[in-house]
Amino acid sequence: DTAVSQTPKYLVTQMGNDKSIKCEQNLGHDTMYWYKQDSKKFLKIMFSYNNKELIINETVPNRFSPKSPDKAHLNLHINSLELGDSAVYFCASSQDGINTEAFFGQGTRLTVV
Amino acid sequence: AQSVSQHNHHVILSEAASLELGCNYSYGGTVNLFWYVQYPGQHLQLLLKYFSGDPLVKGIKGFEAEFIKSKFSFNLRKPSVQWSDTAEYFCAVNARTGANNLFFGTGTRLTVIP
Image 1 (tube, one colour):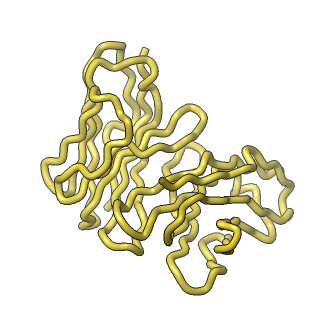
Image 2 (cartoon, chains in turn green, blue):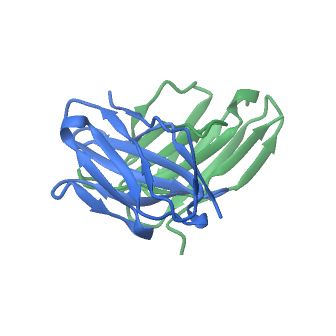
């Protein structure tokens, strides 16, 4: 009964390919996020979705597109993968409100070769 | 926009030593503050959080943190570390108004030597 689950856990792909990472949360939260963790462990928010509406997009290339079929899912689709996209991508969710915490998934290690 | 600074990049301690990791944030409004831990190869887990009230908050595994508003700081402490505390520690902040996204510090790697 994992709270936030991501698939796949590892993804190795060639430059130029298109790939998707799936995320599901069973916590009933209203907001879901995607974070990117680079090789230096720095975490940066990429997207935030609240009730299927994008509310943050932090200078992310438009090759990255979040897709939210419903409140419990936020998938990340990446077109034309580049070497620099190699990182660990974390999905997270939180409940709306001012006093809430984010719950993170296990992460997806993406390696572009 | 918020920003978070963690000045200790890598801390090495022997078991039973005391720990203090620094965290400073920059934001003019009211914030929520968090410490997350990432064990090797794992996801981020919440250690503790501050929303309001007593500025000294206690978290899991014997960790605590103190919010000092005048210093914009939220330092993490533990009186006696264990080998199992070896991990990456992240301070994070979100604004109590507007979007609820977290801004993270660059992390501090803690290595505890048995």
